[in-house]
Length: 262
Image 1 (tube, rainbow, N blue to C red):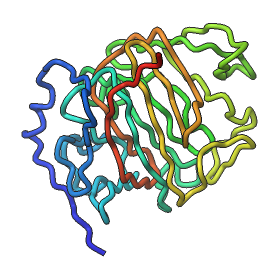
Image 2: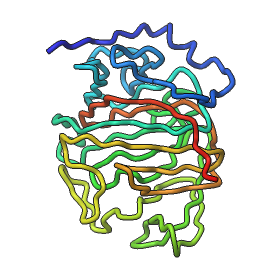
Image 3: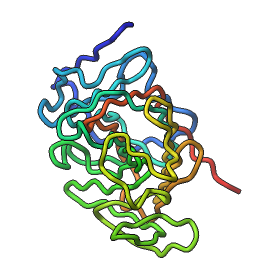
Image 4: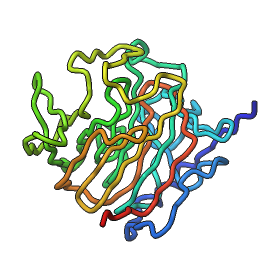
């Protein structure tokens, strides 16, 4: 089994900070070509733009994110008004403080500002959560500024759950909006499965979609709408895939134009 290790040269990636107009897809944009990480750069809590532990590699046509060190890979270009598709599955390895906790990762959209703005790890952004039992949540990832979203939701036990019908508009600039079926009895434990989980079990592929349409965001998991937000403070930026203590494999990352409903 061939393993291609992607090497990074620190100074090269400082050009990633150069500002240019955000791209709106007019046709499908393939962000991962199955061969290398062209168009992406790493940022890690301990090693910044270097990756000596090979957290990010290409394996059998997939991106393997080991999870060993906290950080992510981000697109060098910025995007707006797109339909993002990411196909992923959990691997087996877990690490550090999350070794015995729910497998955790995330897809960050509308990433802006300095690398490592949040906790010296991630971009200021809005997260489409990837975590056992909570995939599809929205999380506001703060940086110099605090991203905010509005979601029609109900409050249960201090948490806000999206409700397509019957929810009350709630605006937050920190914390989390849960997907509609997140188990109120969710526990941060390895292999957690909720009663209504849409996410497939460990080792099976998932298709996660994030539709970013002006100030609206919609999370779709395995063909089902699980969360919807509007009045987003952030409407463009980089896309960042997290390394957060769990091995995750990614075989597809692409952008499609937003399809307007008549």
